[in-house]
Length: 280
Image (cartoon, rainbow, N blue to C red; front, side, top):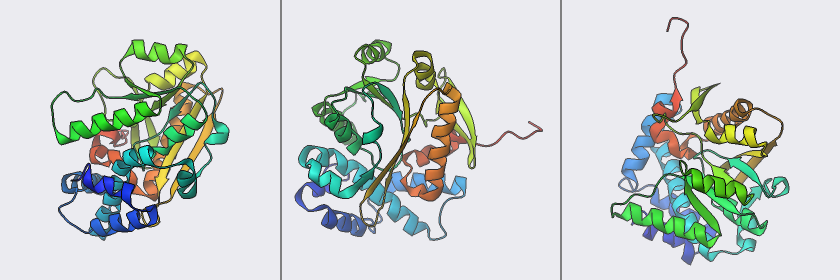
């Protein structure tokens, strides 16, 4: 129900009705309980959980529902529909070959529509799909299938052959680098207002070494109106660490403003690390 039925509601109703239904469903305590409770604990760890914890959880649930619903909306909605509900500054900054970095934040599936309309070849970096059969693995496969309908190629982040193919085709590479520390994976630990953000460094270094254009974007959502706000900045002639710092600053500023939108909040202690004191 949580992965298919509730998100699928968006197919049958206008968006203004759908977002109101999601706001009502967010009051049901059993829906998305494990996801939202884990995120609430992460927000508490960062000192961002509201005094009204239930209200924060409701906002978090709405974001979860919208994010899941986007897979269905990508299949069924026109450009006119998307333009009506999204403010963005990405289109005018697009290039054919670049790396776009964005956090696990908000709901950003419309990026694929933007790239498709611009005739970009899309290469989305991600984890290997689970081999076990479950409702969640079925949804993940469905989501990847939807992205392929948008001429997007899904590549494991450690698949060097796939990455080389993306570079050869001069494609647009999509990366979410705000991740927990992974053994054997290099990362920058960027000092921010919330602590040291762990940012996987491989693709920032790739951009520097190949002199590829870089874009850092944040995909925000208004859970009351359902409007999306996509904000991006293009970077040139910067080092890998400088680009990662811009990404970290934009990410943390967004988290501070709407902490309930950060989907990695459930892993907050592993992604935003404490500052190292002088005595350590």
